[in-house]
Image 1: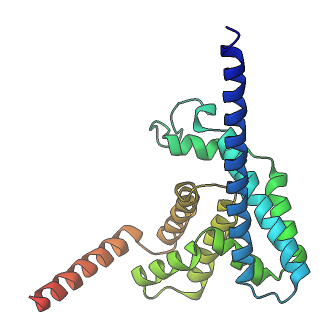
Image 2 (image 1 turned 120 degrees about the vertical axis):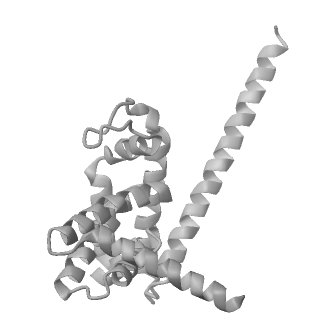
Image 3 (image 1 turned 45 degrees about the vertical axis):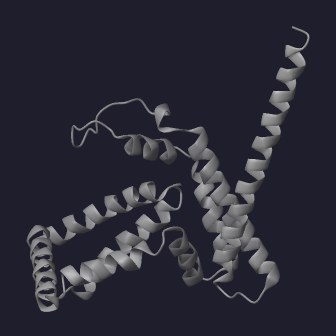
Length: 220
């Protein structure tokens, strides 16, 4: 018994040191990512770049820690009241993360806007969401070639709202889930303003399949 206790204490200390090292490495990786994003802005002001890097790194760490300490299991299993379907693990994780204090998001946005222009702020949000606004708008314009300026503006605004909301979520699956909410709003907007999204999307898919078949036939 006298031998077991010291061994347990030693094992506990070793595990604690290993966890500390892992946490330090994870924090270093987050810091490096934040610095890389900020470097892309070419601010030419070391003090400003340092402040913005601090803001971004702090947000990334906060989102990670909240996600890790509030797993999907903290949200009871149940149904989505809109669809009647059972909530998925992703649904429950998104719900858990959406319960974060609003101050976390406000600290990020206020911190960015303190030193950056609105265009630069958007560039940082694009880094976090891997350019989903531009990518999705490119898809809309391919599916609806005659998109009007008003439609373009509405769709873009919704995606920009999605982008800002999505930066409070950790994984790309969670970020994509937030964008899906606003993509649905965009499709509903088109449907209620003289468009038939289902028909437009179907025609686009059909055209893409025909194009691919023609290319394959040409190669053969």
